[in-house]
Length: 218
Image (cartoon, rainbow, N blue to C red; front, side, top):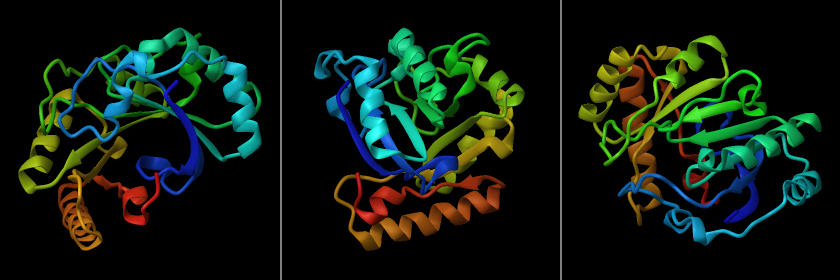
């Protein structure tokens, strides 16, 4: 684990939810736009018992627990145990993943949680990124899988539209959100949000803000 903290979920279908974020170390991709580079190396974290994490969650009593990274599914066994423990205590759990590894299967505790997949092979293609096809099937069959795509231009959103069509991803499970850059002013952030929101509407997609950036939260 790299860190655990409380904040608002700033992206995707649960935007605005009071959340505890559990960030795990290690990632199989190296995205040039990554805003959590400190979590990429598996050695960046420390071993932690799932009961310790559950105690932190109990102290905060959030409406959502977000397991993120890095790429959490690189630690699939431990994350399954954490999901089993938290779900057993009544918590709503969301896993964030880049989608390169297989989706959870029936029988895994992770199968029952919510998943937000952020493919990294479009619109800005990252070396080694490839969406595992099991996520598309899971999005159709479970009702617990959504997809997020970063975009900053009409070209980006059009690329997402082609990708979604080619992969057979249900359009109603897709969010487009702003691809930001470091050091943007509040005015620049808001302008980008307005532009991408309009593009999402024009192309039939859901729009996700990056609320934590707009509000200056973690």
